[in-house]
Image (cartoon, rainbow, N blue to C red; front, side, top):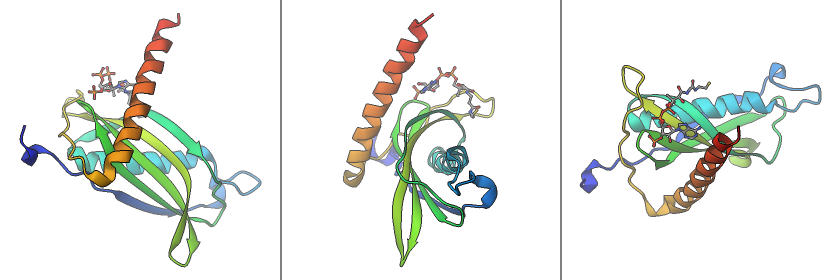
Length: 159
Ligand SMILES: CC(C)(COP(=O)(O)OP(=O)(O)OC[C@H]1O[C@@H](n2cnc3c(N)ncnc32)[C@H](O)[C@@H]1OP(=O)(O)O)[C@@H](O)C(=O)NCCC(=O)NCCS
């Protein structure tokens, strides 16, 4: 394979706002609603990268570090940082708009998506062009993928 066959992953950005029906009585946004937005954004990044239809197979390393409240603007970013054969690990971050063109990171997660062909059979995705500035994300995703695979095998061994 030549360098010309490698594909550069683009970061996708998706903005939304927290509505009252997405919150608990204290005004905090439900984690599940936020994960749905992050999942959609991750799928958009994986679809754009692979030029295929995609489905999420696992969600790894979810960390809700800070809450979103009703009325907050949410910025979600997603980027493919590691690829397997048909799978893509997408680093996905959610930020709160804190004004004056500043955002604060609140949630992080790695979504693992698989690319499909027309018959819904997992199909190979392009190899990723690894840029120097993405190396730390790639290394983190490798650790997360390896630990997820180990956990998957251990769970299968438990009857
Ligand atoms: C995606 C799906 C077709 C994969 O089927 P499968 O029989 O596991 O397919 P394969 O064994 O060929 O695996 C395909 C890829 O998925 C990865 N994968 C499968 N299960 C996984 C898991 N639990 N965690 C992480 N990766 C997984 C495999 O490692 C493989 O990656 P690779 O091609 O890069 O090596 C199947 O799991 C599915 O349809 N899941 C439902 C997806 C969905 O509906 N998502 C929406 C949320 S409900």
